[in-house]
Image (tube, rainbow, N blue to C red; front, side, top):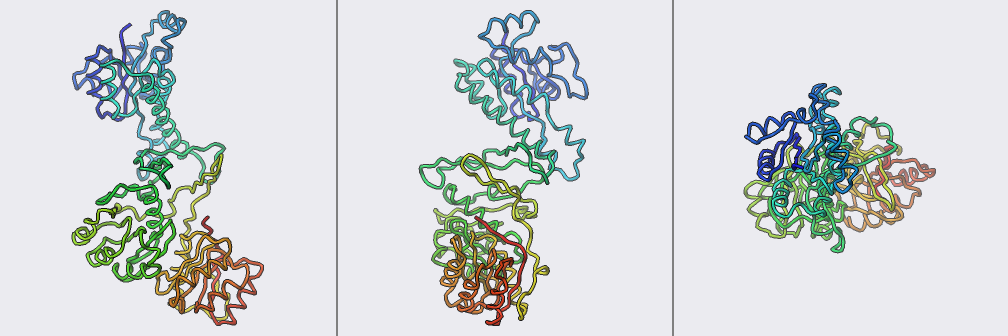
Length: 513
């Protein structure tokens, strides 16, 4: 029987070369719609699918390959005499190669104002059916969903044929392609306020990584494919200089960049092991960096620096004095790049302009546990100081209120039990990840040292006892912000009133485990 190939793709990259190569190898090429036109224009001999099926494309192209003459040719097992006999009885020829990829559903729904009708038109039916049929029968059919695989597939077909191992790998890739597509469609159609009975998450390989958190762990970074507007992140950054990014680099860079989201004015975050050890918002970037570094210069060594303004020469000169792993910013001027770009171990990442996203668009927060996943909506609600309630006899002054809002923002990015001390919209002490809140206060106060006097405190959850607040008061804290809600709130408020400090309740907790 003659060898046949079915080419039907939305992404036409390389399809003419593939068609020409298959014809040179003796294949009969059949095709549909736009792919057929591209092949004909390129001078590739090609037969229309409608000539094979004896049935025209109908319903505006919705039905064209869904036919026994196509799917019989794809699904027949070459090693089963009954299947081969059935093909002969019904005058169906096998199809040996399939190249297919799918309508741009994700790109369509990302367009502003797209209608449901337009979105539904981009849900591919025939394409996934062909891909799945070919992939199911991979011992007899080579299935290609990625144009990057065309040249090597042609080389294999020209030599000894495509090995069973390679066919299986291509089939796995094809099923993943179809599954990711269906996942985005399902996400678009489902009610965002209801938890689906079954769920999947789609991603596309951004880059393999040298290893994971430790050398014995394999790792890769995937770009999240999702319905709706994309959520820009560190995987969108252009690396301008430095060594290859590691798993830990990307994790910490994401934490540092996230800590800047929602801060107005020049701001700098310094992160170590996903925890901000420095964070400052000032009138100029160089000062913001200096104050962020002052927050914990010991922990900053080997950390990740994120800046929400393009890096200038003065800021770069200050950064160059410290060893950092990564600097991430919207840009670097010529002087800054000349200073930092020559440091071979320092990775410079330039974020795209749209990377300061509307935080309400943040994706679901997904955490793996053994044997399953925990899924929650992201904690993205912006702080609203106007809704806070003063619970002490003394109200916070304007400077204190500004610092309290900054500290409350910072505390959301610190692991629970989280305590942060801030002064002048800069972190001066951080206590995190402790099994009790009092210990977190002690750590924050110790790290702040003399800078604790005159600072304000933020606690991600309520104080269960007055002792934590009393330790901060003893160090010189003048105001505090916390959610409230403890059965001992009255005792904590009384401790604040005895010391004459101001305290506000937010009514909202921000645990981060």
